[in-house]
Image (cartoon, rainbow, N blue to C red; front, side, top):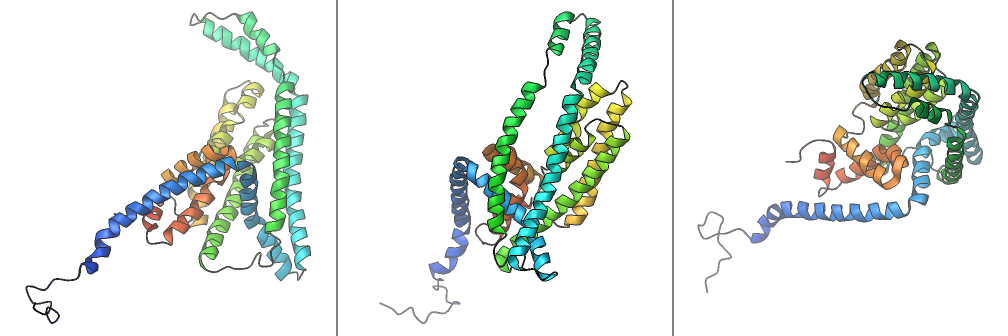
Length: 357
């Protein structure tokens, strides 16, 4: 048997070891395996999150709220030299004070709605009369007396009872959020700069949350000024809901714009104020959401609009409305994690809208 150990690469009979070509040949296969495992893991995690939603939703809300509260703890510790326990307590009290303001706004709006319900009822009777007369011109057969009787039988109190039950459940869940939040911001390293993957996630999520709070507050302020100029009832409530709903991309802005429509239809006799309370807030949302907010975020979370839409659908399916509030920051965190591993980097590029091919 001849010895092939001294063959050179220039020799025609020389062949490279099979192992040198193995990584190139298996690269697509490894990506396929990683993609399959990622799909399986997604299904399993989604099932687990759906079954544990009663505990996971408050915890994740508290986790993201900690990005809002943690800078206050750091401010009290570094700038004012307060002890850690006092900094945490003051930060939580400040946060609770902001929530109290929201609760007082909601309480005042409900009281005003109940007090003015009979005025709205009279206006609804007028609109019902006008609607049946208008449809009668096109030979639609409607029992006018039956329609007006149904309007007169409307009562706000069953809806208030249902809303009270929902509010009580929300309060209980939020108490759990506060408990989680206290533990999350009580750590010794809270408010300090982190390094590595944790630091990148902290920077991205904190930048997103603080920017959204600033842009949503500016949007709500402009919207409230518009509603106040048109003397719209419950204007402060609608502006507050606008601030909250704008945390849901696109869909929240649309809902916030359409929310005042029933009150505007009942309150105004002319058509132009109705158009005013719809078009001007929509213009404000477009200007701030599409011009100011991208400049504040810069490159931002690097998520494609289709990715954001699909994440809203996915997290909304798992956690309902709460999932839609949390969809964007959760997806941004997942993208950062996927981007750090060579096998999952391609999927991170897909979430950004860039083809990995």
